[in-house]
Image (cartoon, rainbow, N blue to C red; front, side, top):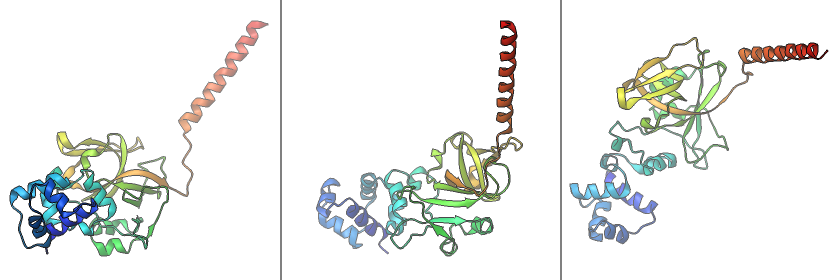
Length: 267
């Protein structure tokens, strides 16, 4: 298969450029470029570097990954510079599904499906049978997936809520203090507030909203997928903030007492 030739032809057409345009920009003959695209000529290392720099796509991606099979959101991420080969990590080509109009689906990973997702997240047959839906207020340029959470570690977000996340290709962009859904090698899906220590210590520190749970470290090698929290859906009302209610009641009582004292002083 002529992966490299198909890729540069595909990228060229996405830019709506002719072979003459690209050949002129990269200072090569049009016949040479045509040979690369048709698979009758093999590029030199220097040519590979020039194509990589021009399209802003890593050489490994150009020669190993069939870009025509990627979704629009994945291509958009690569074109914005989030090429994982350039970042120096393993490639993370997300298995995804689309609807009849070629729009990205939001796949739903229920509580029952979570155990299977741990090993099936990269299996097209597994992802294909997940329930799917659309949310019209989310961007069509990004990839989303919804997971059902369990437990009380993220209260006031209730147990059995459905949390939706945006796929994160470059883990260096993880923001401190922001919630993420993370697929781990051992524990499967976890939903936590994240502290990014990848550059310094090659780890994430995971925090719960519920103060009864202590934070813990997660080695970056244990991470399989990362999704940035977007919103959640729940059939339950959040629990009232009792501490805030108690504080409000105390302030009201103090106001009454101060008013009573002022009334006495004015008599």
